Length: 268
Image 1 (cartoon, rainbow, N blue to C red):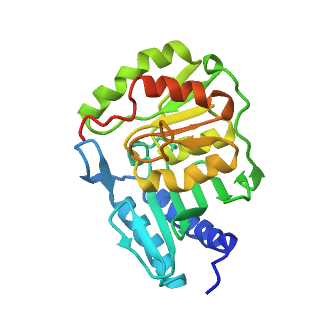
Image 2: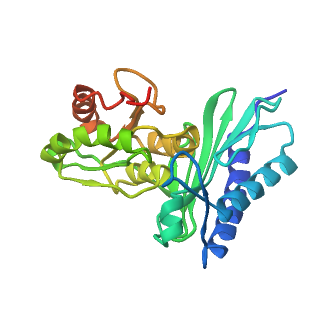
């Protein structure tokens, strides 16, 4: 059987992402926290569950043999070699508080390699897309990461764990980084932070304890926009650490993070 066309898969992902985003946006008025996940501050809403169900139903209707991995519990290995890695609302705390920095994220793997992805922010009507070796785009406009060449002039985004012990460890690197870069930003949605690197809105981003659905689409989009997306010391990007940066500042940022063991998990 021939490998599926990533462009065709992306078209389906775009349609589903927009539909799930519209559903979540329509449910935002009067939304309340429904439950928590990894900690009391890691929230889930009814919109998370409804959005993921829409995505799962749409994928299964169009491609019943594909696998699915979703933040809210969808898990199916499938038999086709294609797996959809979905986050129905990345940035749920922002969503809960009415901060317009949240998104539907859909990454598509073929035989274990991420081939296409879409990250859609309904509140801003911004759609980030990429196909491997095909470039990255925002609402159809090509993206290129920044040309920053000095960490001292770089705007760096990051995020923090919901677990207090991890937060304490993550705080250790902040004083040195604040002395070394232009400034820091914490925007609260990992997929959109990766897209911000792609769009040149920040020069770099790093975070520990991201899940596969946080990295999947956004990581591909950042890489296709020319950013380096890696872990520390030659590792692949993972829950241990994701570092996404324009090539001109990646190495210096990497070395600073490695010096402070930013990929060491105090819970491990």
